[in-house]
Length: 120
Image (spheres, rainbow, N blue to C red):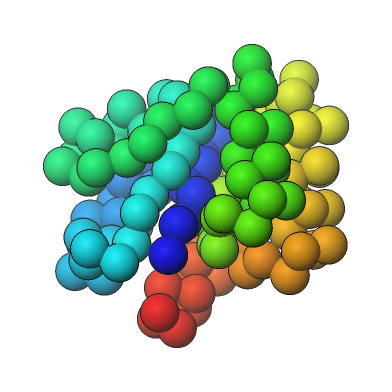
């Protein structure tokens, strides 16, 4: 199962904490993590193996959206910072829309991500 992890700058610490809390599930051989660049770097520093794409603002969100559209990514955990402005908002919207179009589970906060991880 390919799971994308993405976190806005203000949510990266929460993402790493979430990953550490669920490492028993996320370290399984059947789980492959992909990520936008900076989030992936943080996850690697925490001991996770991650395939990193570009940083979100320079195309990483769009790259992951492409994997969703191709049927390669089966789940997206995107910890969004709803109080900050994001210049790449169109890419974020596209990713969310493609998750809906292709019926891919999408969590935009830790509580929803918790429910998705428990379902694996």
